Amino acid sequence: MRNAFADELTKLGSQDSRVIMLSGDIGNKLFDKFKTAHPDRFFNCGVAEANMTGVAAGMAISGLRPITYTITPFVTTRCLEQIRTDVCYHEAPVVIVAVGAGLAYAGLGPTHHACEDISFLRSIPNMVVICPGDAWEVRGALRAALRQDRPVYIRMGKKGEPLVHDAVPADFEIGRAITVTDGDDVCLLSTGNMLPEAVEAAHLLKERGISARVVSFHTVKPLDIACLTEAFDKFRLVATLEEHSLIGGLGAAVAEWVTDDGVKPKQFLRFGTPDTFFKWSGEQEYARERLGLTAAQIADRIQKTLTRN
Amino acid sequence: MLTLQEKTILPETRPIDAPKLAEIAAELRGKVIEMSHKAQTAHLGSSLSCCDIVTAAYWHVTRIDPKDPLDPLRDRFILSKGHAASTLYAALAMRGFFPLEELDTFCQDGGRLAEHPPANLLPGVEAATGSLGHGLPIGIGMALAGRIKNESYRIHALLSDGECNEGSVWEAAMFAAAHKLENICIIVDYNKWQATARSNQTLALAPLRDKWEAFGWDAMEIDGHDIGTVARLMDNVPNGSGKPVALIANTIKGKGVSFMEDDNNWHYRAPTAEEVVLARRELGLI
Image (tube, rainbow over all chains, first blue to last red; front, side):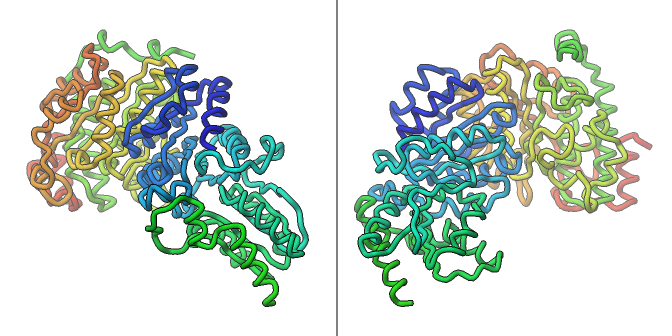
């Protein structure tokens, strides 16, 4: 995802002279093309994310379109007050781009995990939260974010994730979920880098005679209410999938909507990370397996839930 | 549309009328004291210590047009010490950004003049502040935007000494120095008090000028109540040093009213009607 982001950024930077790239001293060589093309519009802000975010807000207030970028916890929770007060309160069109969200950087340990960021950021007024499902959606999200005139948070994985789409989805729009594959029995609402697992889980379910719709629910705020309404109306089971805490993430957002809207779900499952720090060493695949987030585990739990009822 | 230069007088051709500025500062102090009394709000001492600096900004330094408060070419003055909002509001009203009568709505239900300056609500307020350590990074972003867009406006940010406790201030200081942002100037209202204690007994700020110099700024220590000097140095930005400018302004909390000066009870106390009369008399307003 991050390579697609850097490439798309370079293209969009050439089309729009307001685009400014602020990096928190990461992305070695990642932005070389952007830097070469726009040396006056790239700033390595150092390991000082509070200042980076405030500077971005000042630039955005002054008519520019800054993008802040570093590893997820550092570009979100480290500078949360600057995001809330400088960016969101001022309605400053800053695009905050996080890399390594969820357990993407599992091997780096809990200091680098990010399973709380959606929760924090979606609770701030004026903020849009997008979690692209693959590298193509990253490009779509960045294009859409820069067309907005408001703060946007883009939550990316790392690099080399499986591609789900074969181009930027033509209908990529903030707040409008994308149906990846259709089905009749269950609906998998996936946000962020869980999308390939969701697609794989649907394959496994199909082999067991269960037909699943897979939705890339890339925008967690604002929620696609039309998509949710149809899903809870039509399917025997709706499941949310995310590499994020069950507290405050997509699953929680959908549960809030279910409660507030008086929806009566037939079956509703939430897949996410538990309310603990994941302290074990190991990469993303290992962490997912420990936490019940692999395609096979997802398929099993859905199948069990369906047969139990 | 008039250019900024046509609308305002160039700094080098503007004589500083220090006695006139001092008169305005006294009037500003009078308004701030009345607002604190009427609303029974805190932070009067902090609001009074920066009245000379704010007067220098709005009556001499900052090139702004109250009729065109969002002119992209304007200078920006940021009250980073947002708890001195009453001083900012009174100055903006006296300069015509909104009617003077609106000062009566300070902290009243449904008004635009909250205890800390709001975002995108009141003409002339460049940034919503109140949480400390935010104004300088925002100001730096504005200053960089000016450089990128080849616009020659300047940024002044007024910080409190207690605010220099915040790490974001020093992150910002190093960033501005690295980028040789000579179109930004900070003024530290160094009144030696923060909310509940002497500032240097809280965190070791001293030697404050040396710190800013060590962080790469052209730092000067000045008398923050010598309004002519304050105006001259604030206006001398960029000053040819190739560095951002830091004015460490020695001030007195509660300045202008003998029974408030250097008494930190006035961080939270609001004056009675009798005290307002006494204060206005001392300020030569009655």
